Amino acid sequence: MITGATGYVAGWIVKELLDHGLTVHAPVRDPNNKEKLKYLNQLADNNHGTIKFFEADLLKPNSYDEAMKGCELVFHTASPFINKVKDPQRDLVDPAVNGTRNVLSSVNKTKSVKRVVLTSSCAAIYGDAKDMLDLPNGTATEEHWNTTSTLKHQAYSYSKVQAEKEAWKINKAQERWDLVVINPSLVIGPGINPKGTSESFNIVKQLGDGKTKSGVPRLFFGMNDVRDLAVAHFRAGFKPEAKGRHIISHENMPLLQLTSILVDKYGNAYPFPKKEMPKWLVWLVGPIFGIRRKMVANNVGYPFKVDNSKSKKELNMQYRPVKESIVDFFQQMIDNNVVK
Image 1 (cartoon, rainbow, N blue to C red):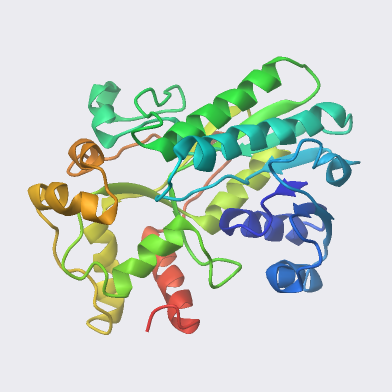
Image 2 (spheres, rainbow, N blue to C red):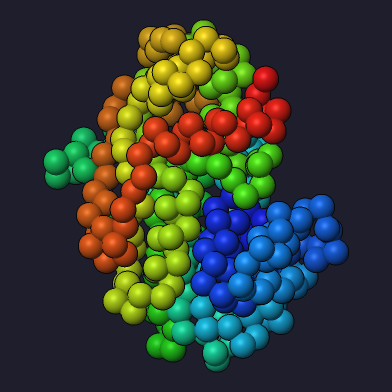
């Protein structure tokens, strides 16, 4: 069973499962919404596996009981990822934590379940890029936890911390099923749904639609391809030796370097940013765009570095180049008239 099946990451996990001839239970808000489910149905029509839809709501207790019946493996990917929120507790933390409780409550009641794979985030490992200065070699590992994010500062990251900690708490209170956690950095690459709504989609779209043509902040990102991330989830589910948390991240680079890959490929066909904005200017105008000054102060100009060696050793991960991921991602947007 997989929560959030219509989502950006989950779509590729569903494909991976269907490619292996498995039966996938997909709880969704409206199983009769053919438009919303058409891309998943297309996957199933062209594959060996089977997909079955169930009605469920992440925030309703017992909502996953029916969909989980007979399942041995549960992937929990559903969680909000939005930058602009009015009430962080209501819009981010409650859905992430209560959703995790609801899914794992059903797991506790479903005796067939042997393993849960949780999609967490590198945001549960570190808060601000500046925090990494205090880590050995300036590098975050699976041993680290984000201790600096709060409801008022980096609320999305705070929600990921709270949701993952809640999952570990529920897991440790029983002995039947084990928990394996995936902690990805920024996810890029083409979606199963070519007109996605993920925050990654919005970031890359803005690099080519003119909104950032005056320049981008010197923000560093670790990145991984959504297709590689799906493989990581699959292996986390089926490799008996997989245990604990796994950082899924490949190349680390500033935003302008990522953009330069698109410039090399497409030239001046799109209004890509060609320079970095000075930090003082980002600090000055940030609030106009909903970017808090503390976020600017603690992240702009600070390198991002995580250790992905556990994923290579335990999940046998081999990452495709970011160049391939970002070009495939942007080309999909071109092909579907998302950028013109």
